[in-house]
Image 1 (cartoon, rainbow, N blue to C red):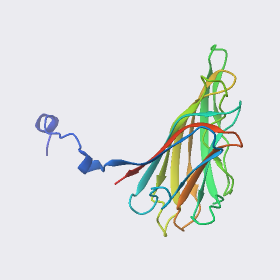
Image 2: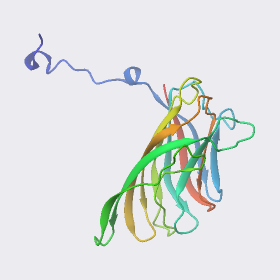
Image 3: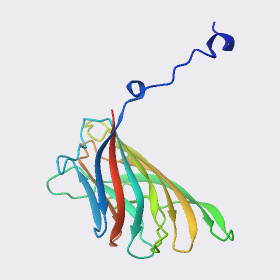
Image 4: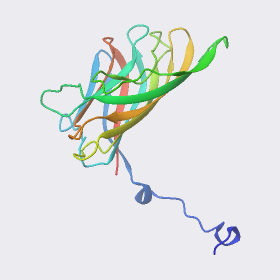
Length: 200
């Protein structure tokens, strides 16, 4: 039986070949759009069985006014683009005010097999120094056997000058292949960047 003395220096740092390379697929930067969509086969987007895991990174997304929430929905139809797949989610957020006056941990909005957009953050301020950043992981969207699991984490500045971090996880309740993901901030225009990556 090996002990610590035998193995303490016998360790190799994992390489990309060991863990799978992360490949940038598509970058969309918006200044006036109300929705940002990633549709498999459209505009060089890949969202199929090429990768088992996909990551969307949203970077400094800033709404045109106070309060909008960054949300996402999914579609299994690349022709009609109906973003209304049922989802079950759970999440929570922590907050702390800039002046230190308040803070807390709260159960977040959730969906119960609902077809509406899933909220990725609590709400974002519209001032120039306020935005939301984070990532959404989508697992095996091309499977026709299992539902599609996802998890997300975001950090944002709220309109009342507070910092929020929110965690969300759940599943898209379909065994059809998910072929498109759409992001939006309510009906507000969004200024920001979303990048799509695939993990081999």
